[in-house]
Image 1 (cartoon, one colour):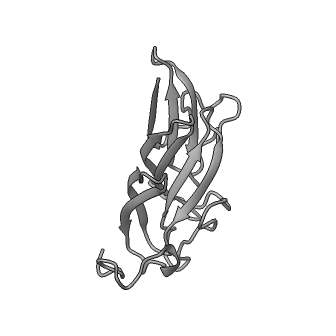
Image 2 (cartoon, rainbow, N blue to C red; image 1 turned 90 degrees about the vertical axis):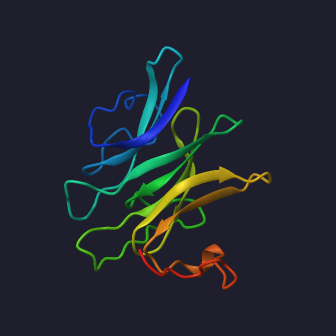
Image 3 (cartoon, helix red, strand yellow; image 1 turned 90 degrees about the horizontal axis):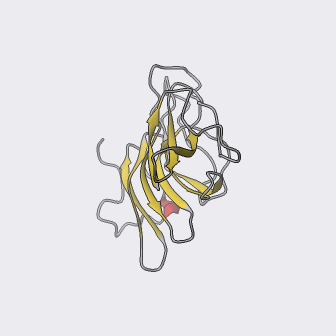
Length: 171
């Protein structure tokens, strides 16, 4: 089997009509996606992961860029999304700046079941552009992410004055 993540603007994602997937429809102009294929390369299921910008542009900054297959059968993904609703993670609320002409994405970390339904997820970010570009697991099982932000990062994520760079200096 193969699991892939990425970005699409297609309204016909192969496998997105499978029963129980998180989201079977494209929201806006682009969405991140997660797809599972069998050993022969046929789609088993696929799900869109993304919101819809308040202002419709040719391109929305949504993509799933990292994936980890867990021993439990769950699939851990990370990337950037627009508002996909309230989540059940550390940061359940989308954090975009309404003063922009467009919405800036938040980082996103989500765990999906082996059949494509969302198990749990969190936004990671603040009011400006936030992208998760690395995803890992500590020996303790903790999820570790790294990425890019244009935000003055929130201190409630554990960023302290002892951090290498505790504030956003440039983008």
